[in-house]
Image 1 (cartoon, rainbow, N blue to C red):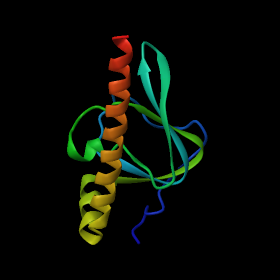
Image 2: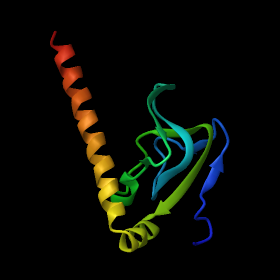
Image 3: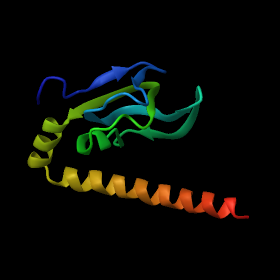
Image 4: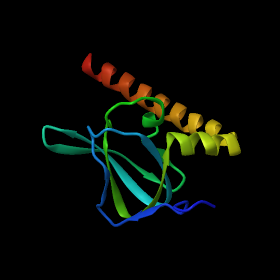
Amino acid sequence: METGALGKTYPDGALIFRQGEAGDCMYVIQAGHVDVLHEREGQEVLLTTLGAGDIFGEIAIFRQEARSATVRARGEARVLTLDKRAFLRRVHEDPSLAYRILQKMSNRIRELSTELAQLKAGSHG
């Protein structure tokens, strides 16, 4: 196992990354929880809370874009960071990792599509 494979432990409320920052890696929650927040006009809105086994920041592996949300530890959280090279190496070692990540991304797309449909239906009523 490589150095740093155990991830980094963040104390409660610690910033993992901020919306608008450049991103070049993804994260895997090994233990604990993180809050995903959207910042708008100085206010933070909680989008979701993720737990052990969940991933976040994965878009940065595929696209060089600014982070679309802020992520903070909720309670103590241990989080593994994977840059693109480490991600590709892990996928080569365990191809099912790519499948699991695609499955999680697909679930998020479905949830967002459902929320969008509900918002659109509500705005016409």
